[in-house]
Amino acid sequence: MTDENQNRPGVEPGKEPKSLSRRDFMYGSAAMLGAGAFFSGASPLMAATESGQGASMNIKSKGWAAVDTSGKLKPWEFERRPVGDDDVLIDIKYASICHSDIHQMKGHWGAQQYPQVPGHEIVGIVSAVGKNVTNFKVGDRAGVGCMVDSNPECESYKNDEEQYCPDTVFTYGYPQESSPTGISQGGYSSNIVVNSHFVVHIPEHISFQKAAPLLCAGITTYSPLMKFDLKKGDKVGVAGIGGLGHMAIKLALSKGAEVYAFTTTPDKVDDILGFGATEAVVVDDLSKLRDYAGTLDYMISTIPVQYDVAAYSSVVKPYGTFTQVGMPEKFELTLNALGLSANRVNFNASLIGGIKETQEVVNYCADNRIHPQIQIISADQINQAWEDVVNKKARYRYVIDSATI
Ligand SMILES: [Zn+2]
Image (cartoon, rainbow, N blue to C red; front, side, top):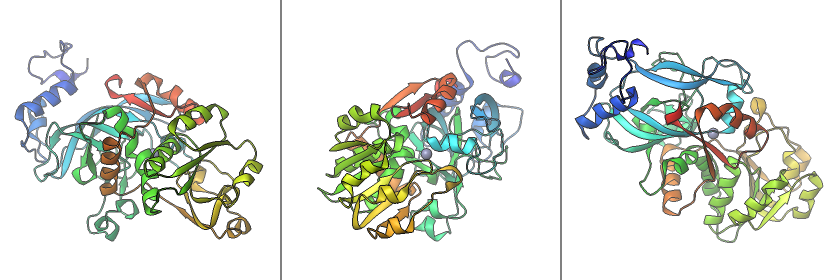
């Protein structure tokens, strides 16, 4: 045992606590103080747990981190900043695996600082709040997605589209002065400290496990679907049926669309039809797309690798819309101008969604029982799960049980 028990009541230095983990103890302490108890940056919670070590203590966290571009994660103990006046501390219960985690840790989107803890689909229970926080109290069910801080003076922030603010700090790997490691650290971990503006409520009528994937996969597909102003009976194409794609199918169906799903994996056809899609098209050859040329009102592509965008967008009617949400290596896609002009498609790319809209999709999915299909794993299965995601074997979102971290 490390010296972290030295100042804990009831735990003799050097001895294992009987049944109370550090996390239990912290949560218990917070719960005892009760809802409405506020913690300033000089957190009484930390003072109580680390008495003698002074105020404004960093918060110890355990996580699984990338240490290089290998795509293999290892257990890592690190520190998070103290709970500031505008922050909440969340005791993480589950975090799910997004393909973006893998891309970023492998350096596909640029050089990274290591160790780095990925994870931006995070759910848990609030265990401390800063004194200015009014939207959360200790014990609340909470979720965190792809953003953890930004600039409230920014126009995009004021317009509830924080993701487009140049100052936004994304959940892992972004420079963050307040972080003891110098960068933001994500949700494959035991806890997280987040500015309360970037935390959403998780309603009681959806499980933590099923809510987690909504924080990225859900909002990333919901936002562009809503911006397209989907109407009942619209024909919607979904390209790439993984974590994001299967949510796009379910969300479009819930709005009354006919959904055409395009996948390269024949094994997924039964699942896709089970989700309620009108058709599942196996694109083992681009010629398969010709049968659908000019027939769909809208298409969303979650494909996270380089592919023939013009071939896929040819299925959209003239003046229809095609949205790219999958993020390939170096974020690069090659566009064929003639292909795109052939149906005068409105091509756009979309990045997650704002916090207000994230709360909206979480509530919408809870109310309408739109649930991701998930597989719960323990932390020691993360590395295998990452390989499965890359090899298109995930069905359809791996969710890490944070108690195993
Ligand atoms: Zn993601």
